[in-house]
Image: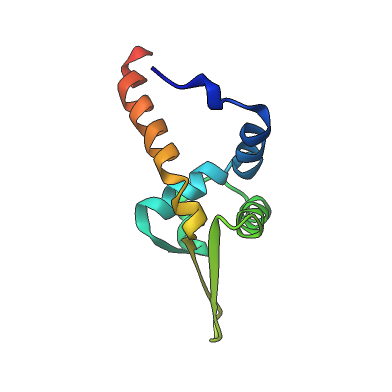
Length: 108
């Protein structure tokens, strides 16, 4: 049984604010799955995301401390993204969502 005594709107709203956005959970998923992705690889993995949307979502995830952006001083520019420690600490939630999806995907 789940412990409802720790269910509180303030921490829930905070957590949702970090992952709210059409692509954030997808970005976190792909970084979790692959460890490191360059911008172009991430865009390819996501498919239909626009450049502006991906750029904005990455900036927000970085500002919230969930991902790390590593830029290498070379031509052409090389930028890689990885999960931060804070982002990695969110992966059990992603794993629970994956488990739930696996258990219920055949329901449709």
